[in-house]
Image (cartoon, rainbow, N blue to C red):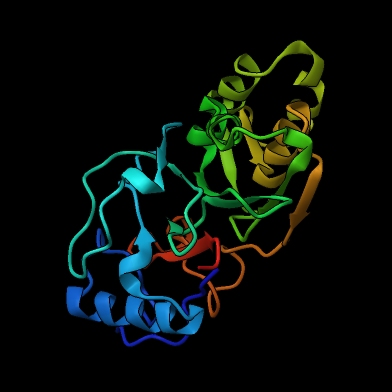
Length: 240
């Protein structure tokens, strides 16, 4: 997982911006991407991206084009699954929750971009299904995202989750929304929701960081905090 530190972009994208969709200088983004790939010890051409739309579609890394500097993919999706050593799945975030997956035997990996819309729509469940292995043999990592004390949402978000949740887990999901003094407003815990939904389908090997992108401006980009800002990325792959 990258941070905003160590790149060449200037404010407000300072400095390790990986978002081609931002108004940042595209050559700076390409240079930042090359720095990240070098730190990972991989060829930038090995990274696979999707055009993220806050949905639940999963793409196979093997069917995606090789990464091309200064360009972006037009293939929509919010998760990538790979079974090929050497291919790297990447998802970009700036408050949304990155979720990385691996089978215990290391034969299949995946990365998911899980904002509230994608979580409610089932992106983590679809990702696990596309991995096509037993849920109890999957390890998941929940990365930095906007924290439970900073993510203010309305009734629409709470309703979307409750309507998409089986009765057996509904109380757990409801507990992830802490009411505020303003009627119809809540603080939402994305990591708790993701963990609940993963456990409901049998994924119990879950690790998480509790870093809040909103609360750490020196370390993380945050769209909710700054609006005009850069993007970080989370990566997972099988060693060649």
